[in-house]
Length: 212
Ligand SMILES: [Zn+2]
Image (cartoon, rainbow, N blue to C red):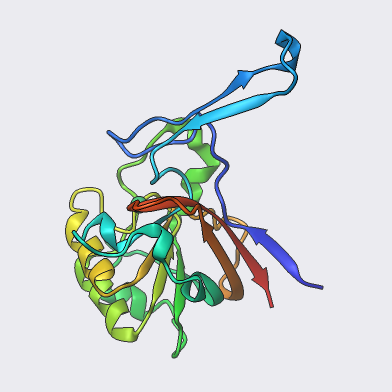
């Protein structure tokens, strides 16, 4: 029997957001209990809220925006690996020891970050594990076309620009804010479907993994 894992965070006002990014507004705009015909909600969020995709335009002027991302990249075989992070950032040596199978196109990195989703009430965490620029280049050289991680940025908090540029200039699709708590390392069928927002640097996505 196939097993479906929902790797998506639930968007709610309590979800941690990147410092300085818009806070999540999700509220009832009209209510049956107040005499309306229907319950209607409204939301106002930054596009990098929760589980989301970064389009190349996020860090590369003039590059592809989110509605033009290739669905062939966003769906298909994906490898989940657990990365034991020795130092502050994920370095090349950590990736070399993570057992990334040859020929991997789509790679999802599960790290100690997954533990943060156990206590979202603690708010945004700065010391999450993320790719150093050298580690990002290593993934580009391996031919990885999509990379995902289990916290709100693929790049370290202290210096986010370089890592993003290395990945996005190479045309890689980046998924951030994955919830991989229930997902064991292995091979899955990935479905990552970002909202089709016009001319935008990213979009929230529903991401599911199906065990083959
Ligand atoms: Zn992002």
